[in-house]
Length: 102
Image (tube, rainbow, N blue to C red; front, side, top):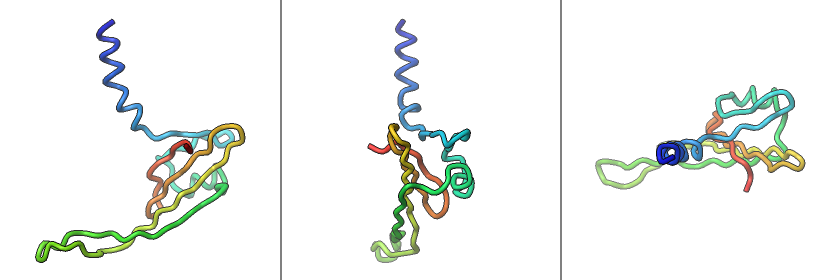
């Protein structure tokens, strides 16, 4: 019994950190998909937001943070009727996470 509890305790952090998946018709959407595949299989999201954020890095010569580029973060929401909505985070054109809306 102790080994079963220990095994469950060790697996819990792994399960909690795993991305969600959700069903789109006959397909399963996951973060392993490309944005094009997600759109092809699940269609357009119910809503989408996009923002551009600065990417900063420390300048070793003076120790100050300096802007070295920009990144685009998109949040797509798929409403699923009675089920919780799914939120897809896309960073620079790649799916980074899929989670249930809270």
